[in-house]
Image (cartoon, rainbow, N blue to C red; front, side):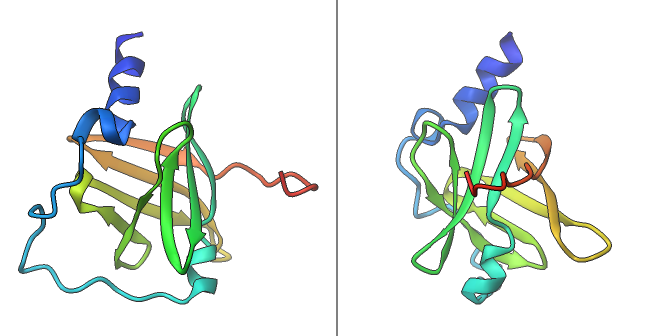
Length: 127
């Protein structure tokens, strides 16, 4: 499927962007927002973007990270309430919450395309 192949290429960080470009970014943007490890952990989980493409979000050394399974992980920067970005890869992620303020999904915006994903339930064994 052509769309799936493009998405896999687009989300495969090294394949679509090479090395991150430290020069990308808006100097007028405010500095990133610092969140506690507990706040960051609320976003952790696996989000199926397509039938065979999963985005894993996790905390590593007090930094929120994202990883398309099978690809290298990359850091996310907090830009505001439930909004994160990876400016070097031109990715923006907006997390969604339910009425109880639990993170239940996300929207990933990249190259003008937005994908929505619901957070997968955790298994009873934590796997």
